[in-house]
View 1: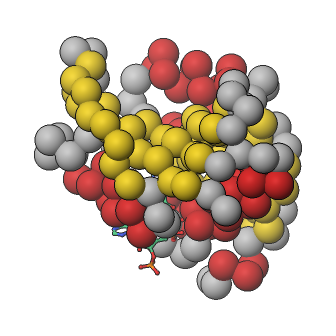
View 2: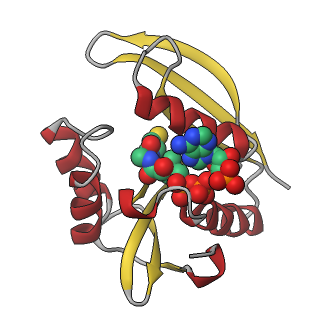
Amino acid sequence: MPAADVRVTRGRDPDAVDRILRALPGWFSVEEAIVEYVADASRLDGYLATVDGETVGVALVDRRFQRLAELALLAVDPAWHRRGVGTELLSQVEADVTADGVSLLQVHTLGPTSQDEGYLQTRAFYTARGFAPLSRRVASWSGPVLLLVKPLG
Ligand SMILES: CC(C)(COP(=O)(O)OP(=O)(O)OC[C@H]1O[C@@H](n2cnc3c(N)ncnc32)[C@H](O)[C@@H]1OP(=O)(O)O)[C@@H](O)C(=O)NCCC(=O)NCCS
């Protein structure tokens, strides 16, 4: 199904976040992290990608700073990977935060020293969508953390 059939709206849906994260055990396997994201879904700016009324993707945006926004979560139901849903969500986030004066979008993900196949694909997505690596650090609890940024506008 082409991206044109995906509808992205602003909205909060913690249950959809819970369902989609639990469908992605290759990326989200730590229970505490899932619970934290579900809690974030009630307080951060939320975006929902729907197809025929079903939520197939979610994004959360943290607006702590005036000129910089953080993509706190981006997740697409695995049945919908590689069909443009992530791109649609990201495009809407970028349009909204740009209109609100933000010039830099950042995202943290698992860094390239990891052999993790899933996050290899995640980094391929962010790179394809214009993000560039900015810094890398090692967090003892979960492996390397990669910070990527994308200039907007
Ligand atoms: C990362 C994710 C959000 C991307 O969403 P998506 O809807 O699958 O991505 P899109 O279909 O919009 O892909 C856009 C482009 O990104 C790149 N890309 C996406 N998935 C890729 C993969 N598995 N391998 C290589 N490139 C990939 C491609 O260039 C693709 O364009 P193309 O299909 O025309 O070649 C989704 O795969 C996902 O939910 N992954 C698991 C959770 C996750 O990693 N979240 C981010 C954590 S920081």
